[in-house]
Image 1 (tube, rainbow over the protein chains, first blue to last red):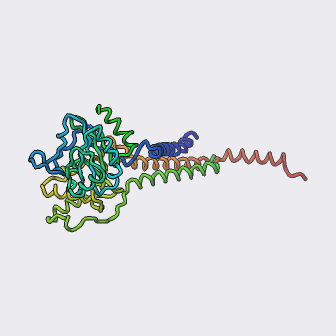
Image 2: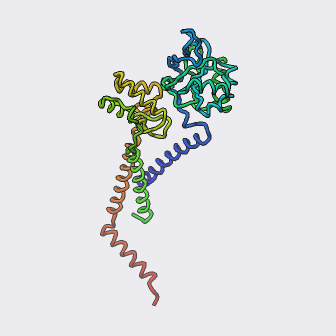
Image 3: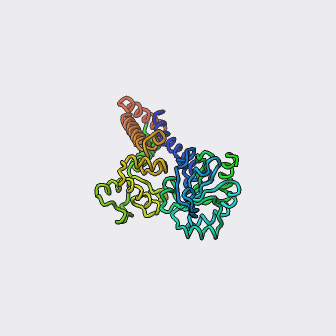
Length: 186
Length: 176
């Protein structure tokens, strides 16, 4: 008799555990504490990829014609992948403008034409200290970029501290970017 | 002592066990739809290398799609990744090295088949576990049913019951 009770209870217990796990995952998603579209970047706490791109504005001197991440060695830097054809990039322009007062921002124009990028910056403002042109998107692949806009925060040693895929909204700034900047003393 | 409720109980157990096994089997099988996004100008001239590129592309996730390989997807990122795979193959990089490079940039998520390691052990073994669990439940339920049938009255018990029934009938027998 006790064996029969066990075999009757076993599937119920198994179902209960499954329901509990599933329910917890669903609750986490619905309550916003877990966003399934935000996957952690493999670069977090690793050195940012070597990056060497032609500048949007050519300076004329051979040394100054390219941008790299090492240009910002010794200070935290925000690396922002954007494009003139990207609507959420327009939406995050004010946020970048605000951030540019706190931290250096390196812009990487992803699969964009120089004249379009220039027009975009004229219309929505230019928060960038320097802009590199990733015309074929190869640098994006190097960084593991899914799509624009995407933002990485690097510490003074060029180590990636944070990555955010998608536009920088007020909520994102307050929840992730500002605390990360404060942790870097910026 | 096999009552109707016990029979029902058995039916429920077997039903749950079958559901359990179905979950296991479903999670093993994968459904794939043939669709090709690749364009002619992307292809490599050497058919052998192109074959390798196609093979690799089918294992790599289009990261901005829902469960599509970069071979199947029309998305920009998928096209860029296909181009990356082909340029690496043309440069003489091995398949494993190409996969490792993409994993270093996009993480395990870029692989449509998650690698078998400590973090994914449960994922890989769970279907097998469900099938075993379901099988065990079916076996247990059948055994009980067999035991219930074996539990019939023997001749002595039958005789006792006959006697009890007879004595009851004589006590409360129909009044004449």
